Image 1 (tube, rainbow, N blue to C red):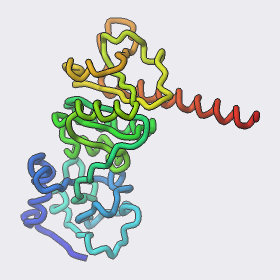
Image 2 (spheres, one colour):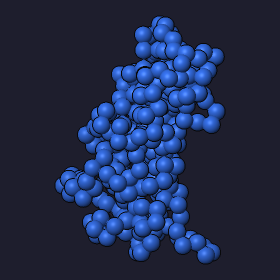
Image 3 (cartoon, rainbow, N blue to C red):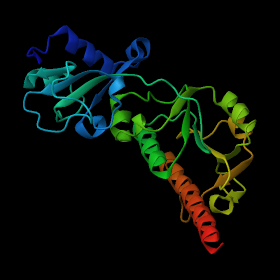
Length: 266
């Protein structure tokens, strides 16, 4: 197993730059992930190198052999030099940026210009839990592969299909396939729980400060909102998205139960 002791090593310098610079990540097609929980379920085909602290006692990514030549052992000083957390976690990986997949399924999210890393990561985690099929992000969303977003996703980034591009084109393409679009909007006519989400649906979530652009929200088939008491004007975008995602999940579970019960009666 290869070992690096000096933080001045050229390979570690590259890892530090990938962790700090979005432009370098985009240009080279790599990003850096850190932490046992994040890396546990990563696709091994995306793994370029994995760095282990000399005192690391946690698990390796599933399926990775201890003899794998991609594993590099680091001294404590070397590991601290590439860590993006206050307390280094002992495991860091250089990874290939995933290839975007063709959108399939019947439950989609469109995220327009989401800027907060914590919000974006939380949306990905909740999307996985609620069964979202695919997430579409505008090009002006915060960098999906920044260390803060990655930590917030807790590995969901590796499991939820996503695409980054022009959302207006995405709406046009999915509408041809019969997808109904719902805009989360303060001016929505309907409360979100009054709509029927049992068929193919897509939900638009906008920027934290400005909400959805007029251009995108005009393409929605329906504007929906979340009722609120007190003096609250709006909810955090990740919170609002989570509420609606789980309403979709609830409706579809109920629908499956009705179908199953109907079959059992017959």
